[in-house]
Length: 407
Image (cartoon, rainbow, N blue to C red; front, side, top):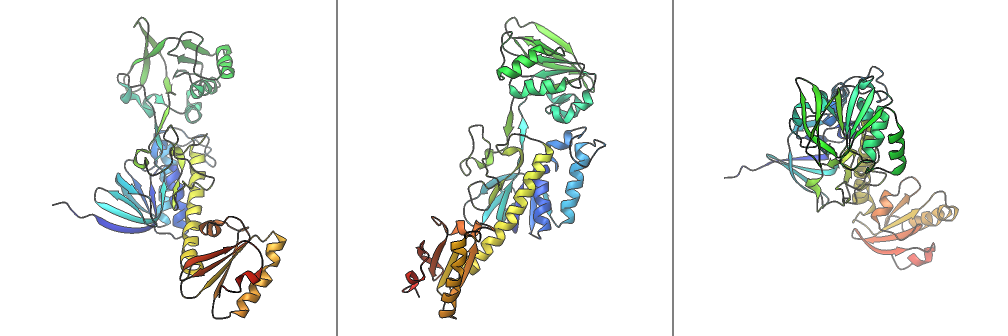
């Protein structure tokens, strides 16, 4: 007999415990929203594998990524956020209540913030897993370039990211050897980056090559390349290797429920909204230009704040704006528009005329347009009439006589 899942209710459910998810947790926790963060592996995400974080503001001593994310986790806990190390098995993001299920639990929330991150695409070469992250194979030049000062590094890939990151590495490394699978002179990057790379005296290219295996003891010592035409092995002694052959967002769970790009990233607007009310997405699982701890934390701050605003506005909308006790008049206007601002006097007169018989609400879109969007108006200003908690009329002309037969 299947075991019945434990049902728990939260204001905010965050899926993913990297810097983006942790930042969102801090903001929603501080707003006194009942919040839980679900992480299937390690709280801190890929950042925990970075030996030195030299570009995160406020940490001049370049601590390990784990040191920074541990502080974030502690801060979120101090804000009352619950943590659960478990994999999410399914989600239902439609409807007012969002359902997130794990093997043993069913979490029901008003808001879901997706922060599932992503993972670098790897080569699949022999012994690769032995040297991932802090053992010699890295995926972020911005993060680890300073630690490779005066060293020899290998770069795998020839796309824009590979060549541009390789160029950045030459500011620190003694030599950068780039493995390119194409014929000599052919790359997958843009022409400007290609010309600059070929002219860089610190960059050396091994054409027609792919990685066959990685070698070393406790740390990477050698990348063995293979010529794709002759199968000849080309050993390259090095200090570290950077792989830039693509990035895979962890969004499989949301296919069919959320709009995704052709590369499976979640599309969001400036408030990190996904297109489904109450569902936000942040960090490396979204379609964004720069994937760094600093930008992930910024995403989390936006989503945490937007989630708090969404819950507050929904509460007001459901119980005050769309109240069912009496007929209602909702006036939606913009305070910086003189005509709609001046019409407030007419709305006040209508309220006095029908005192005790109707409920009048005023929504200023200059401060926030969230409530107005819920009314699905064609334009603002507008007057909306409700009866029994339902909209019966939308009036776009500022003329109080049009309300004569409404109440």
